[in-house]
Image (cartoon, rainbow, N blue to C red; front, top):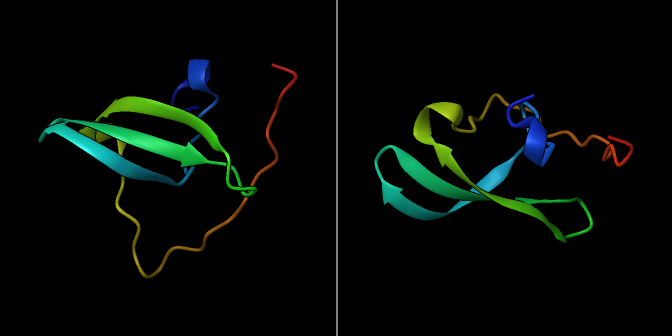
Length: 65
């Protein structure tokens, strides 16, 4: 997991909502239904840009953890 405490996994798609510095950004992660799951302050090295070769996918939310 990218961030276990936030239930974020590698490949989860988020949108940058604030840039604090070149090294630190705030990212919003939204469930498929449109509700915000979490907003996280992340280091830029934890992110990967989406490319034209990526396939968007969904995963079920694990609410048992």
